[in-house]
Image (tube, rainbow, N blue to C red; front, top):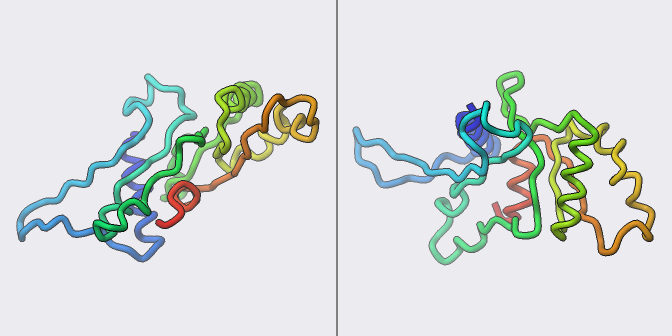
Amino acid sequence: ANLRLAEIALCELMAERNQTLPSCGADQGQVCELGIIVRMPSNDELQEPYIGAAVSQLCALSMPGYEKDRCAVHSSESAICAGLRLRSGHVELAGIPVKGLLDLKLNDAYMLGLKHLFLASASREVYESTVFYNSLSDVLHWHHAPPSVQLCDDLACLAHSLIPNF
């Protein structure tokens, strides 16, 4: 189910941008295959249900060879703490509904030295009730800068943030 949601999210993103999938050079009667990298297990039962987001090669496929580096995903100092869910026929990011679990994730991001953390917009209320959030203004609480938190509704928001030229 997660891989299908990722596929739908990518198609929605392309439609939102009024783009079509790049040509793969297939002749009539042939089928193209688009490979996507999805950092989540394909089985819902074997995963923590709050992880994952789709990352694709669509940007690179639509760019001339010398511009493909503009599509690099800037994720080395970032993390996504959200899942995918289908609502009203559209794929959106699913939030973490449990304050304690979100606090653990936020603290892990801090301990790893991440600079950016992306949460589902649906997590806003839970995020604003965490110890992490309530400690942001206390400079003595931190040994180094905590990650900035950005709330996103969908894959388009993540793509814009992680692939600025897409």
